[in-house]
Length: 144
Image 1: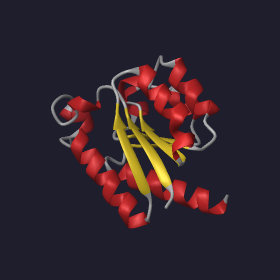
Image 2: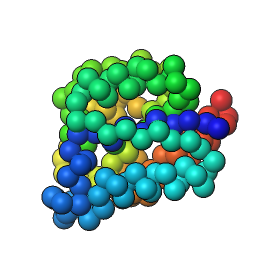
Image 3: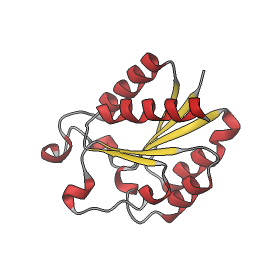
């Protein structure tokens, strides 16, 4: 079964508790449940990790291929801007990575640094963004 790494970045532990007007009431647990349900329906295996440190996110990306990961999804949260090591780790990964945002950062005048290294970005579809990312990665990997 194709394995996808999902990295939930810093700040996502506060989802559903703060900035509800931007991100809604869904919590990190809701994000993870939506991703797991979508993966199951698509016949994919997901490994979901949450990290609040840049070093851990980089280490997970660097080690992922050794553990059978075929692709990755990152919801960078607070890592969206100003974290060059994450951007570099994504760029050097031997697999495609899709960036997912629950809201649309561009609507808040936020430009993602992470997006520059990713195969694509999905933003503004709420927790449905995970389904879109997983489906897109499955299609991409099937064609490879």
